[in-house]
Every structure is written in structure tokens, then in C-alpha cells.
Image (cartoon, rainbow, N blue to C red; front, side, top):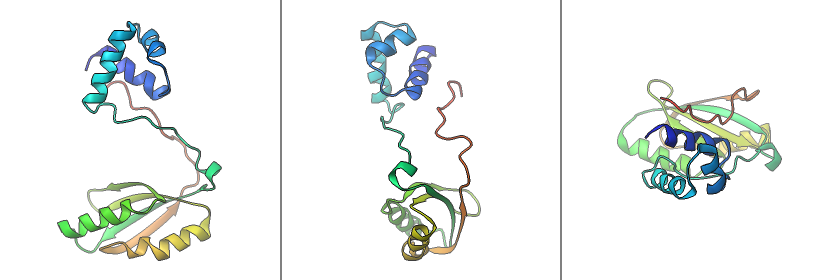
Length: 152
């Protein structure tokens, strides 16, 4: 990956809806060369996809919680079952397995506190292998969906 590829990535992270013509102009390439580079970045998985950033509150999901899960045991069957169960809950919009304690960090959206409590009681505490689950309410997004840095 060279400087031009990094420029392409930086521009697309700012505006993923750029036409190839506009992108080529911004990175100072011909349209055909820009398109070839773009296809290669997609083919190799550097660009994993394109999506819209949607305002959760506009969808009635303005209540956000970070939930920390600690599992009773960390054998492969439990981890696989937990991962699959978490992936099946649409209100869990991000999930990361962590080193140390806790084992997982879940970002959960809901309409309000009552909706989150129902989700917590009906789904989250019943996830496979959960020993402890603790939650904290997100007060404010200070840095939200920031583009990746152009340099490692």
C-alpha cells in the first residue's frame, strides 16, 4: 500500500459516496487508474464495505449502554455459544472479546432505560456462560466513528 492508496482510503472515510470521478480528482489520478486501485483495495479486503452512519436517536434508539460480560469458563464451546448468541441480538451493535477481565465489551442500544432493562433481563443475563454482567450508561460521544489514521 502506497501513499496514493492511503489518500484514496482517507477520502473514502470522509465520504464513502464519492463517485470514482470525484475520488480520482481528489487523489490526482485518472479515473481508470483510480478505479483499478479501488477495486484492488476492495478485492484484498482493505475496504470491507460501504455503509451509512445512521443517527440512533432518530430511530428511537437514543439510549446507549456499554455492558461488560465475564464468563464462568472460557472453553471453546462456551465462547462459540456466547459469540453466536450475542450476534443474534440486534440491539447489540458492537461486541468485542477482550484480554483479561471482563471477557467481553458489548455496545447496546435501546429506546430507553425500561427497554434496556427488558433486554438485560430477557436476553443479556441469559447469554451462555455468563457469570457476571455489568452495565454503564453512555453519557456523551466525545469521539464517534472517527476515520482510521492514514499512517500506522
